[in-house]
Image (cartoon, rainbow, N blue to C red; front, side, top):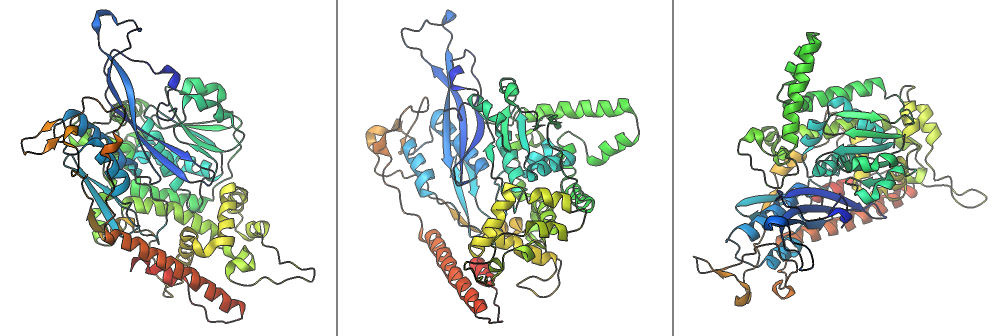
Length: 580
């Protein structure tokens, strides 16, 4: 309940004024770093107090909040948002629902499959609106964030995005603040994806309920988010070593006791900054009614009055735009005034995708990936022998050689300007997790293998392609264009008791209407889920079989190497057959 009501369950009370439905997300993390995503629709419905509660003066209606929550291990936040809002609208404001609400819930939970990576785009239709679910190919295991990357780049300028990312890369405490709850989770997920091949492994609560604000004093790194309404209640708990990032105002406040960050290598910083400016430098100013060139021109004039006026006008437009992010139903009709969370950045650069080029946001993700590739391109030389396919020699005392990563040797072998950051990075939990996975389970981890392949591409000598070439790593947008489309089945209208319907529609079919969202569901109306179509299940079975073949092939190659066989066949050739 506290994540559904982040403001606190102890302050929920009816109100006299009706409030528009709102959306927010939350993320729960288990002990194995698995994520459970919650999409919450908060609606205000008419509330009738019990007889022992005094009636309001003047007989005014009372409205109480009710939260509809959809939980999933898949990060389809924008798609689930659309589905929840359209389902609520269909059930409570129309006479178009031709199956009971229980069948819709069964349909989304049991009958609509999660799409296999890189194989299908599952399309769901509700209220004449099409919702799409898809995942990029398995051989491009960059963390898939099915939300708008544009949101983060509209909130923060390039400099502040780079600082926030670098702070997380060095495992400091970061607290995001916004008036809009949904923006907190969206931006937190994007920031986490920019850490690839590392993975944030500390405290992660993108929407922190008011009752959990004491966790902000935890003696460990964290990435948390808090609403501006809850911020005053958490101030006493925020440590002096916390970096506070205000998403609404593009302001970063560094706590007085925050440990200094190591200098980022100048050449790598310039390359990363130039790549971000080239692909997304205009996004921040466009959201404020200006082009990047216009903003720079005003600054170059050197007039403080003109600069202040520019910022005042830009901020006013931005605050008006951002105030609707949590609105479940956008009432704006003009494209420029539409809710910012519904901008479809998946289609950004569609022409380029058709031509086999990268989309804008693939290029942005790749810019951060290239930073890590450049910094860690020699790390495999300092892995234990076994981790690179060789054998470890038993000593005369028994046992094996050291299976630890040679951290100190690795850092000292790198360029002097790389060493401060690498010394910091190699001491983090996320690097330790990455190396552990690389040493003990490299053959079964596509993200580790993909990163190693990216390093080989950086050196212009790919494992699969011995010809030098300048190759982009990521092509999620173009891969999306090649997906087969699968139209999900509609909720089952058959075998529903006639007594369950509200009326018979003009087409002779039963109609189901709900004045308010039901407090309890009728379990007898759920029915039995229909089986997943064979073409979907066949794709999952094919991937399971290929994964088993990959494991067997990996063992075979390692066995040959252990016997001194010089013939090396890349096990990844089998892996890359997953999209064949």
